[in-house]
Amino acid sequence: MLSITELPAFTDNYIWAIHDTQQAWVVDPGQAEPVQRWLASGGLKLRGILLTHHHGDHIGGVAALRTQFPGIEIIGPLAGRQAGTMPWLTQAVKDRDAVQLAPWGVTLQVLATPGHTLDHICYFAVGTADGTGIDSPALFCGDTLFAAGCGRLFEGSPEQMWTSLSVLAELPSATRMFCAHEYTVANLRFATHVEPANTRTAERLAACIALRAQGRCTLPSTIETELETNPFLRAGSAAEFARRRALKDVFRA
Ligand SMILES: [Zn+2]
Image 1 (tube, rainbow, N blue to C red):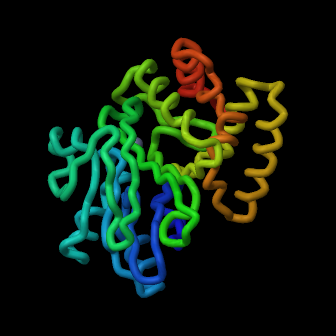
Image 2: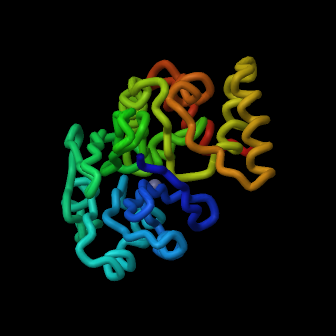
């Protein structure tokens, strides 16, 4: 069975490692060092990289990793290849493509989720209980969906982001959600501001403050938890989503 481990990077990024005891893939290595250190400490070899979008804090470590591990697979958005931001992709993918993680043969589905950037994609694993792969549904969603939040709209429109979030909202409710930043507490402060009567949000804020006080990661979340507490998934319409997103851009807890 494969494990999924968070590798903290920069001040609040997570690089997710999908691995067994010998080999690993990493998602969005914005820095090489945390990956290199973790691989060395466990005696693991890097097999491949999955990229969600072109921002530097997601791709900045690729050059050093491909130098250290020649021949690794590097999978990312076709739009990134077309824009010239990811010249080293070995496989460029688009909406509904399937990607395979060697050597395990685990299949992930690509979901196009424009909004934060136009090239943004997510990777979804259905999960298998047979002990050979990722054991339950998992979503690697970069900067599209965050725990109790969503990415800023640097390139896409509110309508595009709302459509993208709606795709993720329809995944199985038990899907574990692995996003790329530890923004949960700040996001929940905003969520309690937007939905003061949502007791689930207040409970989650208290729980996540306690986790952070112990230096622990608040992720993964689940789609179910996000449907209960994420003010952006709960907006109900593109117009209300746009209003909430604009409010969050200037919100100070
Ligand atoms: Zn980003």
